[in-house]
Amino acid sequence: MKAFRFLFPLLASGLLSAVFAEAVKDREGAVRKDKAEMQNDARWIYNDWQKGFAESRRTGKPLLIVLRCVPCLSCMGLDASVLTSPDLAPLLDQFVCVRLINANAIELAKFQFDYDLSFSTLFFNADGTLYGRYGSWSHQKDPAEKTTAGYKRSLEAALAIHTAYPVNKAVLAGKQGGPTPFATPVEIPLLAGRYKRDLDWEGKVVGSCVHCHQIGDAYRAFYRDQGKPLPSELIYPMPMPETVGVTLEPDQIARVKSVVSGSIAAQAGVQAGDEFTLLGGQLLLSIADFAWALHRVGDPATLEAKIKRGSKQVVLTLSLPAGWRAKSDISRRVGTWPMRGMATGGMVLVDLSDEERTARGLAKDRLGLFVKGLGQYGKHAAAKNAGFQKDDVLVEIHGQSARVTEGELIGQFLQQTKPGDKIKTVVLRGDKRIELLLPMQ
Image (cartoon, rainbow, N blue to C red):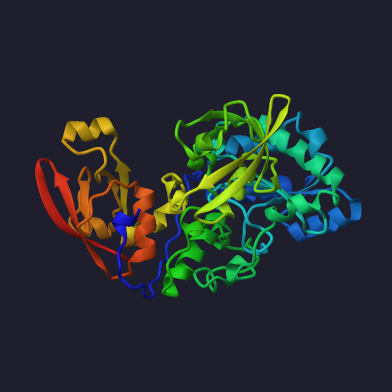
């Protein structure tokens, strides 16, 4: 990481970019259809989380809040299964269930989760204590995926936590959200004035909706406009378990499917088949809870893990070195696209494999970022306008050529450059080395 330290001061800039995941063709129709079908549903309270908390206080039931971006195709299969699956119905009946389709008026201190997902669930006590989070990247990547085995286990775990509450309140402390600079999304400068607390059902309802990913976009723009380096947790939010070298079974709460040799998890002694029960002192009820525990630790940091290994209970320590968070794969996140506009002029970059490097005569430990795609409009056309082309390979940046991923490069630029800077970049185009200036925005 140190090889790419740039010493430019940071000045104010703006990022007025919002992008959307792949969506249904008739977005307006999809949202209005969802309201027509759900607003009088016997189980689901529609788009009113405050009413959900009031009902939770009245009944003593735990509160389940689903946040669903209706026009987005991602997680469509999971969403349909949660609404209709007979296997889930007996569990859902034990909750007060709320369905939110927009993020305009959520309390940011209370609603902290992976904003890049189009389907998330938060489990609360009526007093506001968060029991845990659920979010699935497996379903996010495959709209047709309908498996609810993992969701069912999270429901069961949340009910078990509720039964033991408040005796278990101490192990829930780390799961609570931290302080925020704004109370609601519509107060963040990027969104303020453009959106209101309530949806415009009399006009274009989709255009009046704050999507969850826009919260992350707005936070990043706020820091950029203030002339501050972006915090690492905004560039690399909710790191997945793979960041520390472990893959968890998607249909379990936190059971280890595999461990990468030599990784942080492997060095700590994690083994395939292990089940994480506590991470950083926090009870786990999903892979999203694992990601949250990683999200809240420092850089560097140590993180204690309690693991069930067969009939034994094992305590291990994950040692997270400086720069660990930048190893998180952010390439598929919708929030990364606006950051590409800031940092790479709209280029989509892919780290060449060792085999591809050999074929091109590039060393395995040197920079080799392949330009997979180029933005064509607005700020995302900056690289194209500066002379970069699809299929170029970046081999030197600002005189440095240490190997980094796209995500690492984005993080370094957003923390160590300012808008208006032009970074000398050398690309391979066929057998030619060409020098270009990459604009920062």
